[in-house]
Length: 324
Image (cartoon, rainbow, N blue to C red):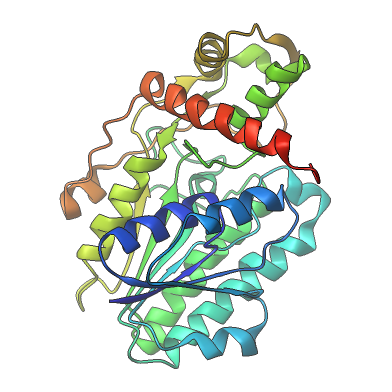
C-alpha cells in the first residue's frame, strides 16, 4: 500500500508514518516545516523515518503542488495550523492551511480515482459551547468558541459536500488532547515541563480546575490504523469519529505527574479561563470501538512518565545543538 501523509513532520503525522512503515507500507510524507514551533523537532522526527519513506517539503495550500501527489491509494491528511489561542493572533494562517489546504486535498482525491480513502484530522474543539458531556458524534457542533474550531468544522462540512457531489470515501477523526513522546511544544504538558525545568511560572486557568480528555499517542495511532483497516462503504461513505481516552482528568493531575517525574515543583500562577477554552472535554468513543475495537488503554499516570523519559533526552540533544 502506498499512503500519502500530510503533516508528516508533525506530532501525530510522524507517529502515523512510523506505524505505516512498520506495517510495510510505502509512505509519501509532506510538510511545509513552518516555524510555528521549533523546526529542529520537526526535522528530528523526520530523521527517524527510514525505509520506504520519501518526503517533500510543500505547503498544502499550494494547489498545483498538491495535485502532483496523486499516485497513492490512501491519504491521511493531518497537516493544519494548530492551536486555539494562536488563531486569535494569526487568523489568516488558519484560513490558508485549514481551509484552502483542506480543499486542495479534497480536489486531489476527487481527481485521482485510485485514491480509495481519505482520513482527515478534525478536532474535539468543534463541539464548542453547545454540547453535553461526554461528547458524542451526533451532538451539536454549530457554536465554535474559536476560529480554529470553526475551520475544523468547516473542513468536516466541505468533506461532506464532496462526498455528496463526487462520492469520495472519507473518515474524519475528532482528536482529543493528544500527548506523548515527540509531542508539540505548544501543548500544555510540554510547555509546563519546559517552564518547570527553567524555573519559570506555570500558568493554570481557573486554578487548574479545567479538565481534559488526555489521549496517549499510541492509543491514537491504534485508532487511526483501525480506521485504515475498516474503510467506508457506500452505505456510509463519509464518517466522523471521536478519538479520545473517554476520561476527563483535571489539569492539576497533569501538573502533579510532571512534578513527580521531573523532580521539580511547579510555581503556579492562576489566571481566568480564556473565552476560547472549554471547561471540560470528554470523548464518547463507542462508535469507533464498534467499528474497529478501539479501546484506549493508557492512563495519564502511565503516559506522562513516558513523555518525560523522551523529553529529558530531547532536552539534552537540543542543548547540544550549537544553533539552539
